[in-house]
Image (cartoon, rainbow, N blue to C red; front, top):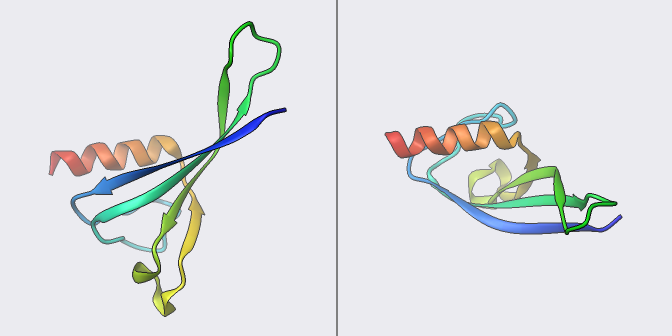
Length: 86
């Protein structure tokens, strides 16, 4: 089965939090990695998301170590929508 990873960025204008995070994160631009697998036996190229990871830069982590955490795409979308409304 073919798998692909797409790297994008998301930007928060305000501090935000998600269930997978230890606490609020500062406003800024974060790297998002989405892994998808190809759906077999269809007449066109189609993929389904299997994992979404948010990269927290070293500057936001105690001790200066970067961290990658799995996030719920729906929760991330809701947090970005709420951030735009503020």
